[in-house]
Image 1 (tube, helix red, strand yellow):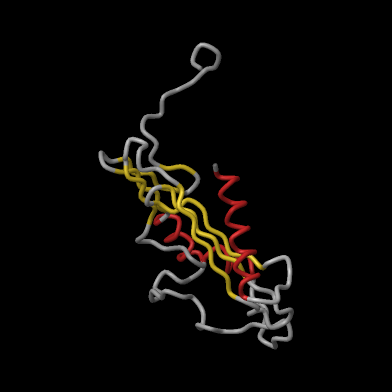
Image 2 (cartoon, rainbow, N blue to C red):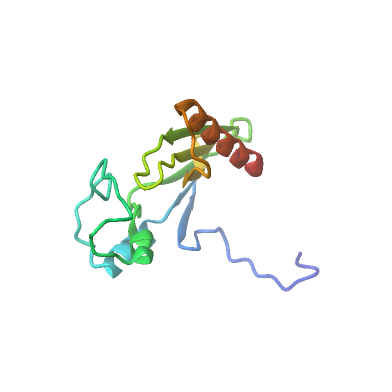
Length: 162
């Protein structure tokens, strides 16, 4: 590339798109602790207490809710910002890097339309590389159908990743 373009060697990658990169002998670790702390400070939550779920568990929301609206962009930017966790990719020499996919479904929990929600988690070796949670595009009549739709979603995600 240096023959065709002007390049400069910046050394070992340590920070990219708010992701901290630590390259050790045994593993590569990615985390966003600095970015998460910055978000907490910007939102006035730097002194908040840790909790696993940032909302009331098993809360069922409806479109007819009378609760005041919140800024969705602000909420989405700060929810899930962990400061002490990251993704670890062990250096296995390529032999242990297989895709493992999990899927699950929350059957007809949407009170307004009886939609189910699919969840998919994909691991490369021991590290999670892709995850999603989305409302299913069809209304299903059984848990079997709901699981089938979730597995189909997982299969599509796996094919795309391969």
